[in-house]
Length: 492
Image (cartoon, rainbow, N blue to C red; front, side, top):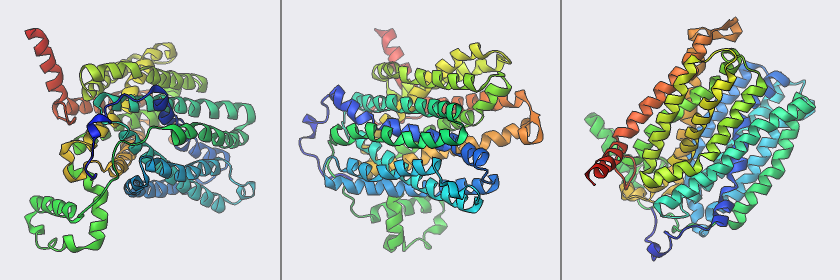
């Protein structure tokens, strides 16, 4: 929790200058530029180009992802410690972790040539490189996003911060789509990926420097944690409420040093609004995880498109997301952030539903779907972190109020969980329904069900959740906000 704030009301509602907001936002570009190739290109580079056995590579991906998930809450707590170094302390931690992100990304796409004929050592290189890039990415992103949540305490300014940041993030994703395609086409698979690893270095430095040098400072005091026994007692009471028989086995929990160290990682879960936000965020994110996993298959085997057309779809998708920023800012001001997010979910579900009517040669007709779902992804990226910033500093948090790093550590973990759930469920379901290239099965119907029907159903579930449950600290549920406002308009 934070120490008492003095004079806070006079400082935290000031509108951030546009140039300082841009300075803070630029760092999101290299973050997103690094994230997409690690997910999409590494498996192709090491599996198809360097011939690392797929079984070994799969084990490496699982091991590094597990380690990555475990480290997120720890990094959040470390970021909170850096708030004692001043109002830009979190950015100091960003600067310390940035070389790991850049170095790890370069390692991934530039393994030593001497290892190409030694699969075991090449697999070891991949394992170490993934560990380094995941650690660097988690350190930079968690502390950077936590700093953004502390730039202002104003409801609408927080949305400016998050959606402004995501504009640069979407540009980074666009570069992550375009550059590998261009470099591998011009230089060949191996040289193209090596050059992508090289060019990331100056891009990361160029776009991180404005954030590190000119970003506005945090308006919050340092995070101070006292009496971890309070958190332990809360979770013990919760366990006993579920199973009264646990009262005796857990009676010494508050005196356990290891438990008192571990529990603060998960203390933000005491905040019921945070738990509700995580539920909606993970369900909604799973829809994206499903769609991303089979998108290229859908373009190739249902639309009968080529790699160029798949790239165009991705560019249109991310371009629409970047262009949607003013729309979601306007709607979040007019209604609420969760209401704007709900509208985005409904638009995405409706637009995706029309995909069931498309088939071979319908690339042009898919473009409106890509545009509308791109608008929706702009809300998915920009609005939830703004809602999270409000929740962190709400009274609902009680003794976790203001523990920004701890909250964002769990937020990063939930982001990966949502993607993993979607990815883990999509391909097995597609195989079960008749799409399994390894066995020569290419059912278009299976892809339509997995790429269209499954994400639409998941989106509808997420929309129903956010319609009925209250998530925002200073607003009602979406149902209350929209119907209440409509009733007020009719009465007037």
